Length: 324
Image (cartoon, rainbow, N blue to C red; front, side, top):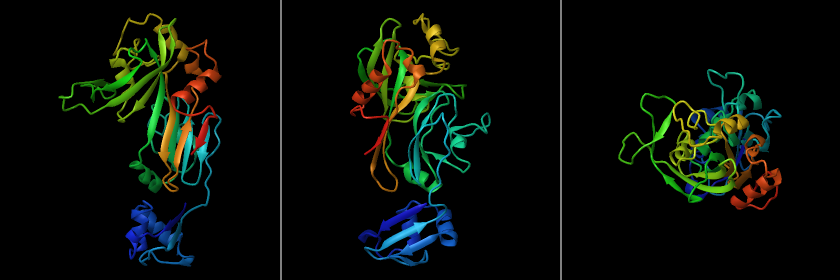
């Protein structure tokens, strides 16, 4: 990892170790590693972490290998990578990080033998864009970064009106570790939960829609719970869908066939915008809808799907990933 920083008036006279912690978001452990094993320079000359700096000084701090590339995996496209972060497309069916049931097969273990830090997590059956930090201090630097995420989902029924706001608290269902449910604003167990939705494609024959969801909060199962509450469960959702044990519904007679056709919950994180933790450039990425979700709309081509996403995301149809 390499960092360059120009000292501002605000940091004039401060010790380098304070600059490293406050401005570069390094942990005390990382500051110690730079001190013992790395490089620390001011204006091209070696300095100690206890040395002070002046306005205009150029600080350079480095530790570890200059560029640790992620491993290539045919199932996990890498849209962007530098020495600090990577933006990847997680496929459905693979967990984000190792857990007791999946110690050896996860997005993180497929991409690196070293420790990676997911800035956000996606459910096993959810696909789409993820940011991965290559170090703990970059992860810490991004914790408070505003990340704008948009999803598309295949849902049963047709939303009326076609766009709107779902503002309902969500809580863990009593006596359940996994299941969430909507509740009233007065319920102390409920957490504020706001989702924007917009219908972008409808298959009236099969009574199914492609809907864009934008999260203003980040609760567990937020989209799935909110959309189910609105009467539009996600296709293939084994926990909240019409064919689930806990939320059965006979409103959608074609749902058994369509659930089998998609084979997983139809949810894809398609748009991601955030500030790079080091360069502070705005980063924006878009990921096309996977084939298993597209097959629920057999009359719509892959090209049209791509153009639809670019249109609703406010982009021109210019490819599957870009930095701005």
